[in-house]
Amino acid sequence: MTPDISALLTTCNRQHLLPRVLEGLSRQSLDPARFEVVAIDDGSSDATPQILAAWQEKIPLRIVRQNRAGLAAARNLSIFLARGPILVFLDDDDVPEPDLLAAHLAAHVTHLDLGVAILGRTTLAPEVRRLPLMRHVTEIGDQLFSYGKILPGQVLDYTGFWGGRSSCKRTFLVRYGVFNPDYKFGCEDIELGWRLNRHGLRVVFEPRAHTVMIRALTFDQFCARSYQQGRSQHRFHRMHDDPKVRAYCEIEPAAAAWSRRRFDYAAHLRWTRKLDRLATSRQAAGLPIHRTLQASLDDAYLDAFFLSRAKGIADASFLAAHISSTQGDRAPLPEYQSG
Image (cartoon, rainbow, N blue to C red; front, side):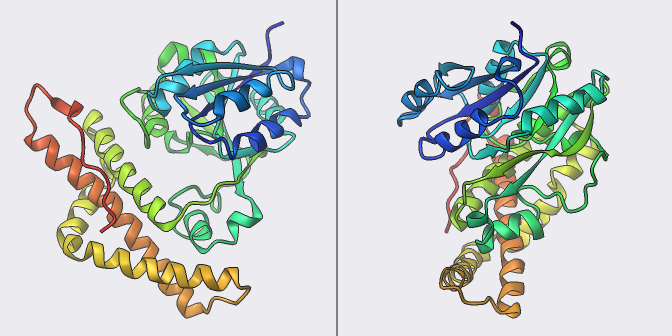
């Protein structure tokens, strides 16, 4: 029997999170006969294969392992393996709420147009949301995701095609394009959305399609993430020479900021790290965070993460201008250094 919807789960070395994600899939209100889960193990070196195998008797799960090739390549493989006409992309640190698949499926029944994708809602688990950094990146700085200004049913452009919380028609992807495997992390979803936009992509927000993020990031992890995002933004704008893409990727503001602030970047990270530790320790002790500390920390976070992206853009731009034509963009980029 062909499933109505395919949940595509790509994962790598998340043995500590996978059981909760898979349990969420086992609690779906949608009849298990109507959905499948396609799990792509992107070369995990931990117990991920054993954990996935143990859940095959509990949910309609197919597992494929590939050599480490990155998120975009893993998602492409899951697209071509999927049997359902509707595809839901899942992250391996988000737990699906019971009505997730039913809500995505119902939204596509309402919006039959081939080019309509559905953006679901992701919230933070209570223990994650309490952390000052995670609150900032989802509610203040919007560096991770933010739903504050989006209304239910609102139609968004390609920038609303967020990987890990979106669904679309399989036929639309197979016909007009899948993820670019050159992207290992960052912008792979927005870049695909840009290409699909010319074929009529529209993204509709459906908050009832709900997942809960259970992974907290540290300050240094988020700086490294921002740096990698900057590298991907540079790649995105070079692939698509358009003013809208250039503006989205912050090329000019990043270049100006990095030229002005590059010599105090490491010092700013050290200062922000101290503020982050102070606020986090007060939160852990059940003490209030003074408004002045909170405001200073939010300002410091904004600068730290933007400068980390700017450094990624600057490093990628420097190499692109100096590497040989035979190497092209295949040359390795420098790794993130926290300073």
